[in-house]
Image (cartoon, rainbow, N blue to C red):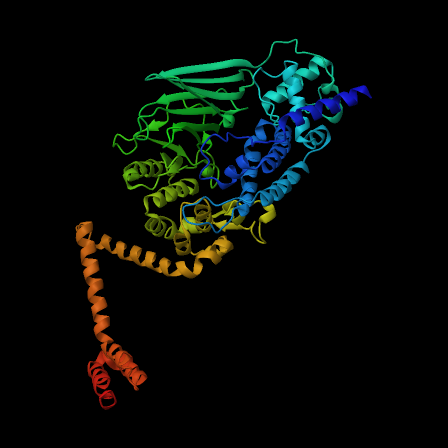
Amino acid sequence: MRRILFLVALLVAPGAAWAQQYKPDFNCSADHSKDSIATMLCQNSEAAKHELIFDQTYYALRQVVGKAGWKALKQEVIADDDALKECIVPFTPEGELPEADPDCYIKKMDAITEKYKNRLSGSALEEASRPIDDHIALQEKLLTLGYLPAGSTADGVYGESTRQAIGAWKLNSGISQVDDFISNSDAVSLASSDKASKTEPKYLPFQKEVNVNGTLFKVGANCDSQENSCSNVSLTITEGKKTTTLQLKSLDDLGTPDLSFDKPIFGSEDAVVYGSVYTGGAHCCVDSLLVFKNENKEWSVASLPEQDGGPSGGSPYKDLAGDGHHEIAVNDMRFDYKFDCYACSLSPAQIFEIRNNHLEDVSGDKRFHPFLEKEVQNAESSLVRGGPNMGFYAGITAIKAQEGNFLSYWDEKIKRNPDLNNLSSIDYCDAAELPQKKCPPNGSDPLKFPNALAVFLYKTGYIDQYDLKYTGYSVREIDKSEYDRTHPINIFKYYIKIGIYKISTLHSYAPSLSDGIFYSVVFSVLFLIFLSFAFYFLPIFIAAKTKSQHFWLIVFVNVFFGWTFLGWLAALLMALMMDRDRQT
């Protein structure tokens, strides 16, 4: 009985000390001015609490699936996060950040949490169902007993360092180590435990520092080289008497952080830090981030897309355009294995710069076209003679879309290629990246490669709805909500875009003409055609202007007999003469 009372006292006291002010599991001091959800979570304690409750379930499930299932689980969570976008207020004055509704967020986050919790059982379910304040209290106890590294933060999220601490405490306490979860009985035992850590901590301090023109960058963490994971990764930046410390939580529980320092980057005189962590695996993965100074001269953090391959081995910055301005290029891993095997896939490059205080994809900038074209040439040299090459064609088509040449490449290489048009590929739900529960009837039926590629490129943002319509799909078939919002206005824009494309294809018949001369000729011809139409329908314009009582008769003669010239002349005289007495 005393043990239970002791547990209750232990769990209640920290909750009172916290005053129930919760923060999300990311750094709120970073710039989130473009993210409605993140801004709301940093401002609303209750919403942040429910995010932490989800974290408890997520990290329990993460422990169940093991490292081999981390990537798939992460992708599933990203897909489920799309539902949270419905909590953003759609109508916001221009220039203002749309607000996120915390009540809506809590409701949807609880539903996602329950979905994942249904996949747990036994001690994992008991742990995930425990109140967040109890989790914090138990972490505090592990910290007090020396199982967690000094300086660790008890935030209720059980990552790799906490799992290691739970395992060490169970071993030292003689508790059967069936798993590294804290069951209800384990929680009672831990709350009253006085078994301090007697073994050497598996996590040892990791530190690296670099001085760049007087600015000291120091990264610190607690790392286990055998497990290739770290916790409490932080970066301390000292500029003269000013010191800034950033918690790099996105690198926690992964591998040993590898940071490099460059100056100048992105046309700025401020040093920029690039951090990467290799999580292991044959082809996956490297998690990366940038630490940079924003326009307010404050240090900010931006995460890069998850990357393929092993450790970076150095700085990723390159002058891709040859203009003395550095960018960072990463590969879009969404293309890996999508249409073919890993070695048979081409992942297009995504080029990023820091603009307006956030990481911006600038792959479509004209200055990168030579770089992209080299990527295309290298890919085309890898095409297998007589092979399907779906993985390569998918990547090349995406690069052509970045260049603004999607329609011409689609016509020349995809639409007119009978071999590709007869190939079966992935199904609609896979191409649209829809979870199974949202897959419509017949959505699991295989698509022909061009159809699957068009859907995939649209959903990944490489082509717009006009390009999609040109391939034979309507936006309504892919995203009804977007169709209903844009279709009435943009159907006219579609025909304008296709018309401009068709005109541009005429240049291939006169390649010796420069672009300037070609388009001058085109616009001159179009202007003459416009004048011809205006002259042809001149009788109708006059009849409309004078409000002729015989307007429809004049229209009939002008439209159907104007081409005979005598008919046109008759229509003109009718417009000028038939109502002259009435006008006088």
